[in-house]
Length: 277
Image (cartoon, rainbow, N blue to C red; front, side, top):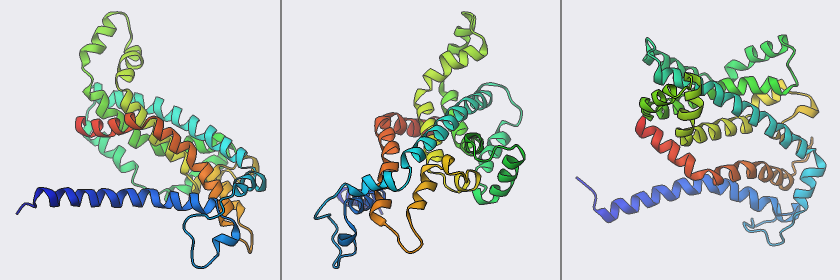
């Protein structure tokens, strides 16, 4: 039995509304909290909208802790790991999509399986490796693991796009004097731009939000990233929610702006990749 058109439409709208509320409500609540003072925050009954908005919490977020330093470290680590991920994932995806590899499906299965290990199970071997290589408290200590963690999903995204590009375009480029490597970077990657943008956003957000490795591998105050730095605002007996909320908003904004700028390319990359894969 099929539902009437109006019922089906209403159910879709309700489902979409639930998804939107689930995604935006926490961020909106944090924003409102960041504009309240301590008195209004604990006032009963609860006030949802800040009656006396203040920007003092944002000022204290930058003065109580070196938030700007933490953001700089996060940007450096995220940008470096994203760039390295895209280079390696492009080579891997091109090999899978274009070369006549034996057991290609097995390779793809192994790539998918490698992304299923919980991060906590990898923490000790990663820590021991970085300690042995004397890389603790450096950008490299985070860039390398973040690259490895982002590679599976980025490779799979790029494989689906590379497969959709006609081989004749590469052959024409190689006839004109390009090497296979040149054809990859001059023809395939530009034509797969939506997939490249999607993979880069996924890799950047994965590195920007990560907490466990950043806490374990970089304990130096000068090398802390934003997620770790935000945990330092709380004291032994105090938990300044307005200041922490202000720091969270400052941390969320760069990613939100990045996704807003490349929204169409990211959505197009996800949908086209799913259709073409």
